[in-house]
Image (tube, rainbow, N blue to C red; front, side, top):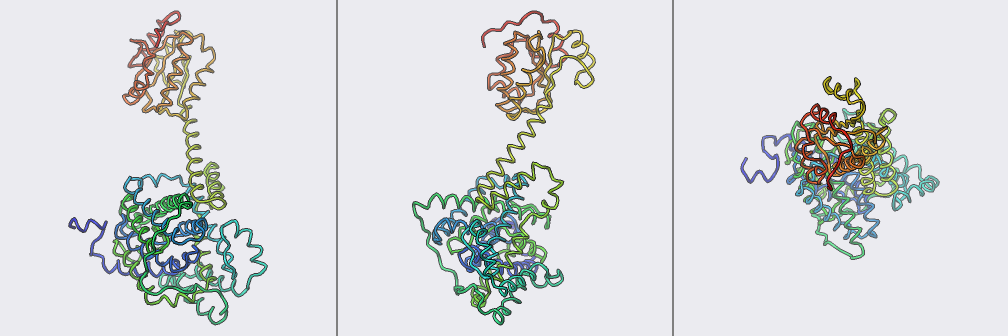
Amino acid sequence: MNSGMNLIHGVHFKNLRGDAFGGVVAAVIALPLALAFGVASGAGAVAGLYGAIFVGFFAALFGGTPAQASGPTGPLTVVFAGLLIDLGHDLSLAFTTVILGGVGLILLGVMGVGRYISLMPYPVISGFMSGIGAIIIILQIGPLIGHDAASGVLANLVAIPGFSLTSSGRFLLLGGLALGISALTPKSIGSVIPPPLLALLVCTPLAAWFVPEAPVIGTVPAGFPSLVLPGVRLEMIPIMIEGACVIALMGAIDSLLTSLVCDNMTRTQHNSNRELIGQGIGNMVSGLFGGLPGAGATMRSVANIRSGGRTPLSGALMGLVLLATLLWLGPLAEQIPLAVLAGILLKVGVDIIDWRFLRHVAEAPRMDVGIMVVVFLVTVLVDLITAVGVGVVLASLLFVKEMADLQLGTMSVITKAHEETPLTPEEADVLDRAQGRIVLIHVDGPMSFGSAKNMVRRLETVPGLKKFTSCILDLSDVPMIDGTAALAIEDMLRIIRAHKQHLFFVGMQPKVEAVLQGLGVLAHIRPGHRYETRLDALQQAAKAEGPATFAKA
């Protein structure tokens, strides 16, 4: 492959038949979902179709996951719908925010952030995805029974009782039929025609015959999409920046999680940062043409791969097929009932919920369940970026707490020999002969800020600490230490000095010594009081008598 071809990651022409079939199948699956996401977003069905065309085409060509099919997804549709409400339904501002979100994705890729997305705690992802699924379900209840969706999740929850009192049974049957076809189509049939498309083909003519008054998509512009001039209003800039950050973050998470699925299916390795750049380019172009934000879409990517797609040509072909569909079949889409799209989206919402985690919630660690529930509730009741931020911070704090407890358990305060101490027989003999005049502090493992203060408190509470004449600090088994823990070591040394005890240091690994030296902790150790082995330190401590004297540090 020449250098020019390297501009497209993973492209080759040895799999043209598989890529062609995979791209067409992915387009067939993407079509009804794109229309449904467009309606759900508030920007219109065609915005979803534009997003599928442009994000699908450009993310495939410039991304880092060869077999990935991209386009509007549930999470990003929810993000855009909320953003549109916050911006006063100004489409120009909303699409400008999509462009900025694409810029954010490119910056994440250029800065090499892609490899860190996989470090997102699973309970956070689980709670977030389940919350997105719940939002989609809540927002589609109104359209399912013939009502316009209210603005926002809470408004829809409040309006549901009123919807149910004035609902149309025929609309409900129509949407329920679409939901049933989407959910219950046998795999043998679904492998030939995707269930969402089957739902459209069956329910749309039935609606025309039996429920002609059902609200439909309406006008779908024909012809190639026109450019949408970016717009800015000073008072809306904070909302636009926050929205762009959410689009970038959600797009990165959505895409890279799907990339992992593609890797598992194709036995390949994606390029995370290149994938983010490709998704960013796709979103920028989508915003310029009035399309929804998009990301790697799991359902479409899996269908593409199972149908033979292996290179970026399949994803690019998906976008071209959707463009051809828009140019020639757009008028047919105008007659699709909103209740049918609501039924299809209800299935999407149910699928997004993390049932794998929920099935094991009774046996899962309580901490993980708690994080998942908090993120779920914040996602549904507040907003998406707050949910992710709260989840990551909460998971990090709880992790630090657990690590601190483990690290505290690695600190041993030894005043006499017994079976559980790490002492050799010679060392135990020296300690026994000292008759309680020596205290040995041994740490086995890393030391970090989480456990630092508790280690100091543990030393302060050692029974009879003031009665010891010598203290030995053994850090030979500490592989790393951070600045907070290093300063905690200094606090421990100050306590020892305050009691006028002789202080001896045992072995330090180079990384630990560099940190302690850099923060001036080693200045508290008297010359000649550092030893390579614990036995040497114990023997010298046994000889020390009387209170220690120190020069001013």
